[in-house]
Image 1 (cartoon, rainbow, N blue to C red):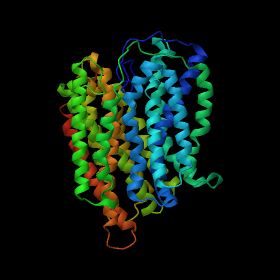
Image 2: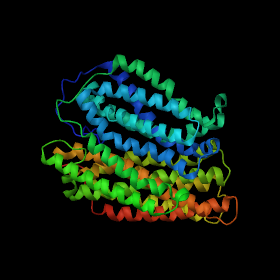
Image 3: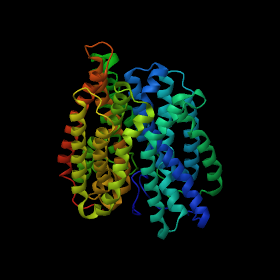
Image 4: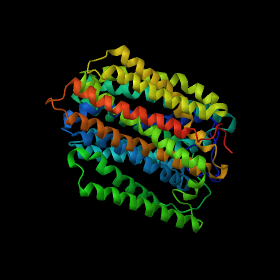
Length: 490
């Protein structure tokens, strides 16, 4: 991990007297912010394993399960840049603590949800509070460590991200099967509460405060327009099954496009006045960045939907428990850990090549999985594990370096803003993927002519998603051919 601006930090400006801590104090501060980062990624992945249990307990429909996952990623994406700007202006420690406290409260409310609507709303709340908390992590690390020590701190951050990707499916499965205090799936949210309380107590004592010297006004109008436009586009897609495609669905799509056009016009107007917009449209004139946005949407669009549909197939189709589902998914995480270090080490010399190889490897893994599930039989653990392990190898090569490769063609003065936008687009891509591929999966099951869906129906639906997703990653690899070769920024 380099000392370059983080993708989740947003625009970096001059610092206003950051306070450097030392020794044990800096280490403790690092642990606190890593707890927050860990919980963010954990909650983004843990719900996929819990989805069938949630659906059964709350009598949630397929679209509501999709919203339970997409609401978090969409709200997180909407909050990242705004959260970073708030931390720059009002203090990163303060915003981290506010975000962490909000994350704790919304986690408790998720655990107390009495119906799907409440759970979806609180999941959106979780995403928004995570969007306030997560962008502060890098600023606090910078304020806590001297320049020579930051590389180790950022390395610890990367390790925690890898640990969370492994822990999400396993911990979710373990907690659901353990059924502590007869709480079932609710424990995956309750567990955030004691961890957050401990982090808040320690963080109040050890976290340093820092802020930017910039006095630029926050572009709340732009953030709201972007979130509204994306929501209008996703709503009719996710609601395809209960609503069908009527004039209202097409009207919502048209409204989403219009709102996003208004958003771009608003951002151009702000830029013309010399203000700082959420998104500078001038970035789209940078070829590497424009191509990178397309590649990121395609790449991350297949990940969230993949694990949702696979989890439903494994539990509702093959009859595996949540814990057994976590064990099946584990090889994917292990594969990504194995290759992520290689990808980072070779990024400067072969960044674009690694992205293409990674995307093609993911496509190959999905075709392998398609070949073993298409017949409608339970393929067994080791065949599933092999396909998932191959996919993890591809993810580890591409995901950790995608942002750096894209930012290679962006001038240094624009890197912070471009990175913030790119990270937000990654989250939006995940939400769009859940909307589109999740709808294809659930609609294919609903269209079954055999009555109550069985293993053959779930196998058929997953097979369709795998073919579409494999094609998506082949297209992604082609788009990546237009990216810069090396991964060192200008």
